[in-house]
Image (cartoon, rainbow, N blue to C red):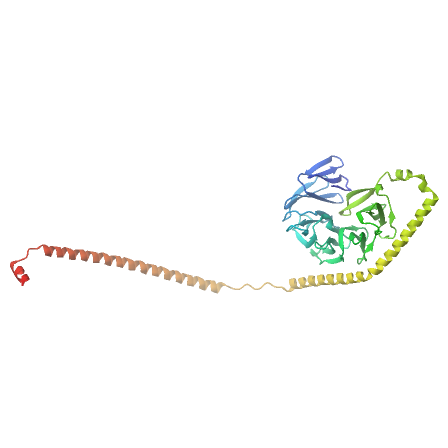
Amino acid sequence: MLIEIDHPNFSSIELRGQTLIVHSMQAGPRVLRENVQDAAVVAQGSVVQIMAFLNADYAWFFRGQDELHSERLELGQPYGGGGRLIQDGLGRCHLFYFVRPSPGPSCLLCHHHFTDAWSGPQTVSANVFGEPWGFSVSWHSDQYLHLAYLAHKDRRLLYRVYDLEHGLWSGAVTFSEASCAHPHFVSAGPLHLFWLEELEQTMLKARHKTEHWSAPISLSTGRGHAGSVGFSHASGQWSVLWGEGSDFYQVPFGRWEERRAVERGDFEYVWKVQGGLTLPVYKGKQQMEAKEEAQPQEEARPEVQEEKKQLAAQEQEAFAQRLAEERSRQARAQAAFMEQAFRTLKEWEEVKEEIRVWRREWKPPQPVDLTPLTTRLDRLERRVLSLKQAQEEERLQGETGRAQLERELLRLRARLEELELQQKAKPRSFWWRVLGRA
């Protein structure tokens, strides 16, 4: 994986195997880190910021202009893929990545933000399809972060916004009920969102946001499955490019009827940091002019050119008709969506107002004075201890007196036995013998 950067000192960031390499203008390639599973990069002005993800519950963050200084970021849980860095317009860097609590397609999408230091992880949603192409995040001039992601059960396209002032994510709004893939935000004047919608044919669709989001617009022809979506920014004009089978098309932003077929070989597909986020970009090759000159001369014949013009006019007319039908069909869906979005934002504002009221009116309870109870408890404990000591002394005195009585009794018994023996040992007189017989 190679990500190009427009920077005075660095040209690109490359993940070669598990080795993270930064390509410098002066010093050439240099290894930043080994055993790297995934990497993300963003650049704004002269500051480059790189996140290197390992197969662990932490990552390494590199930041600098000439020299890149590193620090360790604790993720809290093992990295589950999808790492992405986004730069907002207020100088903050935002990190997004997956955490996989259990096997399966469902993941937690986590969010950190960086000013002077990284914040702790914040869970955005637990309902995210766990593939790197399953979500897109972008900053826009309306001072919000915008997130589009796929639900893990049916891959519906969902949308949220992040309020930097309060640090809160809004509730989810459904942008498409169909199975979707590869959402991409591009902030080019209005904020644009592109995604692939899997119907009978895989269709490329788009919306743009001024004050409100527009209705979805189908950009592809419908004659084949759309794929390989990328973007081009040449001569101040943004355009989207995609393939349908062997055909390749390009449409300028905001001029959706001006779709035209182009040659895929005239473009090179790269990943590039553009406007604070990383996008798939098609760059025009330098050999385009030479290739145009080398085209067969028969293509320049008037008959061929006239036939191509007629086909292009018919194609544009058919596309305009389908576009009008699509807009008419989706007018009701747009009204329903705006009602749902308004209701969601209204509920969000009500929750914020309740939080403000609670913060303003809530007062901590007064502490209870426990001094009388503790004093009485101490007094009772001392009385119990005194009673225990008195009982122990009485028990000891009783045992001592009993032992003395037992000793006296033993002495008396011994004296009595001695006297009886002495009495028996005396000789009997004549009268004792006579009287004893009587």
